[in-house]
Image (tube, rainbow, N blue to C red; front, side):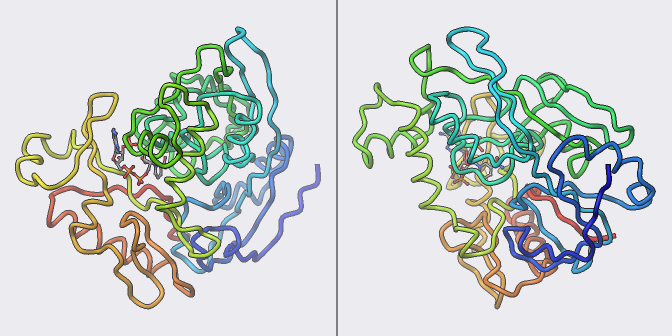
Length: 353
Ligand code: NAP
């Protein structure tokens, strides 16, 4: 197969922060068969690479990126079986937009990922950080993940257990930048509406939106209702990247375990909101910590902290990646100084080669 790589490609349209960066090589991946010849090419062997989805979770902190950027555009959603009348299993190719998958599930009355409505990015990126929102994580619906090993070209199926999912974490993330595995498809199992579907309304904000804003009886909530409520919540809080450059939450909400004992944190900072997660661990909203340090709405020329949500750093236009990174460092340092908690970045930072 002949592969034509584009050269010196501007990545500004390919990242939702709208940061300037030029990729030395750029290749759109539409089909898994493109991967083996690419992997065995001398160019691939001699250059670093980056797998790029929709660029919604990445910060290019360098103006020149001397690498091969593989833009994942592998399409397709395919029902593979209905293991029981209650469940449908889908094989979803990794270049599909997550929002398209949620739309597909809503159209086909499949429950399980409606709490993850409106999350940006591709399906292939979702297992990497075990995306989760409003009480649901992708780990709860993943059967397995199909990958191509970028060292050998071999395909492999990684089971849910082998994915080692954790809070915004998985084996793919720990490999660094998506690791040496190119995720080609994700198999997920969903619940057919009317066959034991139980909506997840454990988050107070979801319940309030359903009951108070939408006037829905909490005992008669449909898959579509949950998705609508989540979309309302997200639209209220999050800036549209088409209008204001951003990559969503910049930092991961810290789990108290491992950093500081729950008791000592609550005693020292009684005013800070903490939540007990379903797995029993305590999480502190990183946005609250950043806001308490006075950063919410802060702005210096092109960069700043979003006025409605302190977890989101924004590019007001013309910012460079380095400036956003410097701001993130200052925020992280002040949270450390004030709370003794070291924030972990959620987004992938590209420093260049
Ligand atoms: P939020 O709803 O203000 O929540 C902030 C933090 O508080 C999160 O850590 C959340 O835990 C926790 N929390 C809130 N209500 C809770 C409850 N009733 N029970 C247990 N924990 C609770 O956060 P946000 O920034 O506006 O984001 C909304 C949702 O989208 C959150 O669930 C957030 O985690 C999720 N999100 C996910 C990603 C991602 O997957 N990459 C990126 C951005 C936002 P959880 O994190 O466990 O939900």
